[in-house]
Image: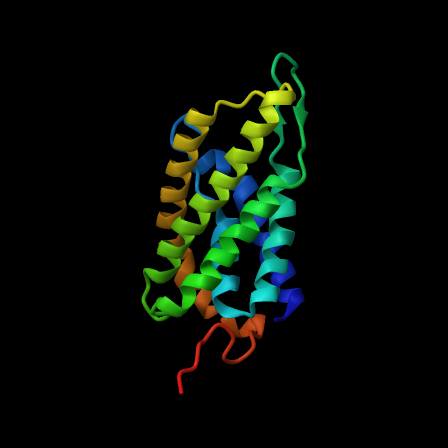
Length: 186
């Protein structure tokens, strides 16, 4: 994989996620699409398992650094390194496991995998922050967060309907290894 193309795409997708989040948010619900998850799914569908996990780890760390968690009773927020990184890796590995069962040319492949990866990533994040809320003053309500993040996964899948074909057009720039993620049967 061309890591320079990945770095540029990561910068663009993370910038779009941070810059357009308020504009694409559904009211004041906190429900907005994630562009980074779509990029994770695209990379995980097209490259080797190790490369997909490293790419997901990098993007997950960037999500951790840009999504601080509010603290209970304090006007400050805490940046916690780890939950999004592990969630992104779990989502990427889910895509790696499912990609052999998917028809790559189907336009709904990326949206379906984006929904599943986003849902798994958000479940991992909610579990980590729920455990952390027991011993740390993190303002985190697991039930509300799970519902909001489920809706975020749905909206991410809807956004992937548009982003998927655009990413497929840019696939030659990423220089994915030929045959990566394709299981051969003899």
